[in-house]
Length: 284
Image (cartoon, rainbow, N blue to C red; front, side):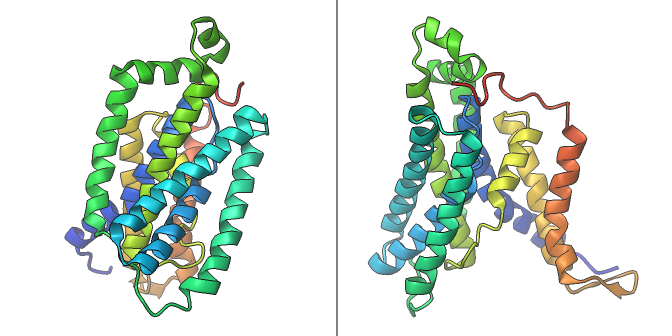
């Protein structure tokens, strides 16, 4: 049995959970307002690439972060336009944005970032860890204690009744998605900060894992935080155990890298039929 440094494992788990927390909160605002959002992955990827590119060009971590927040907000606002104005299917819109992010960021990476000998100027990861924790507190309070949060819940549960009460669902959803885009921008900037620079497809499905954590957490902030911490721990364990022998045998790297995704599937399968989404999710 390999020896495990539990202190290092805990720090790794926190570092790996932080971007999931930020993305899950972005998804929470979107889906609580009634808009399905699988575009979290694309928004994070765009933001990570932008933070690295602007961080290299300007040598300013503040400008890199500002650009990441701006592109995250723009991607989520585009999702709002496509789904709320043009009434495009919300799943198809999310898939299109994810495909656009994968293709365009791969091009930027090959054309510019891979050629650069300058490292991106980035804030340290600890800044984002604190931001992630504060974001959980802020979103939980906003949803439970403010009029704006009640409007988001009302629109997400029954958009028709909300209209009768004088609430405009489209306006509420635009605000919710734009705020979620800011959180996805933070998540993307954090992923780049953890790695030191941008590489192709570096979000590696974290947007989908964040969605799974959101579902496991029943679309609530604190339970979603707990689910993200568990996913972060599973990912930290697989990184820690890669290349080590278990019961005298060394398992292939592919087994360890697939472990978080297998865990996600098992966790979601166990919750099928038990977790109830917002009643108005996907409705106009």
